[in-house]
Length: 243
Image 1: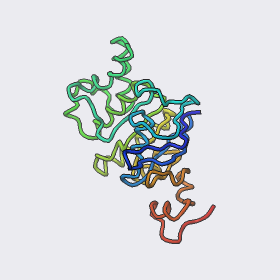
Image 2: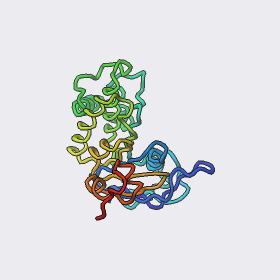
Image 3: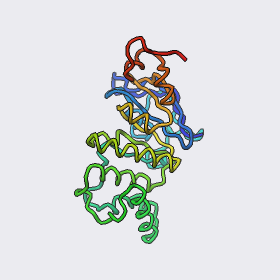
Image 4: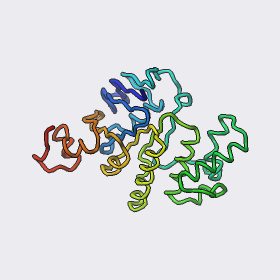
């Protein structure tokens, strides 16, 4: 069944950041949350993670309501824009953090860290200080750390935005291949059309805290739901096709 979000609204004082949002993410599916800065996509992701409390609506996983489930018990992994690594730990120390929390023994932790670093293209880098990593390497470590907890849902909040364009284009292709190869259930927040279309099986286009359309990249390109979606996706005026 996966994740179901129904009628979700998040407000900060008099400001509504997310308004009446509905969507679902099936097991093994990658959903992109696409929209301009300030549209509410990161707030929506934080609400799913349990970091923001919604004022209305429900978030369920396989039919179970998550309203009273704290962040650390949801079984979700999250990667932020800046990675938020532990600067006092080396690469291995960052990746094995969740494994320590699970009580995994040292030998098993060592083996699992090696597997994860190999998976993200950093084989043999266990002893490097994270303060000496490039931006792309740091994001790979952040991804490996999130995966170490074996999350049932991976939440990626603009994970490549801080990188230069060339590196971002390289990593987005690698990340898309990895997500597909692992059959990972994930939500990816981005403001970049091509990034969303490369990474996601379906894309939810957001504006003003609302989801305007959820569809496959192909359908979004060919049949935007309205003129606002068409304009955001770069269609020329009057070019919207029905279907």
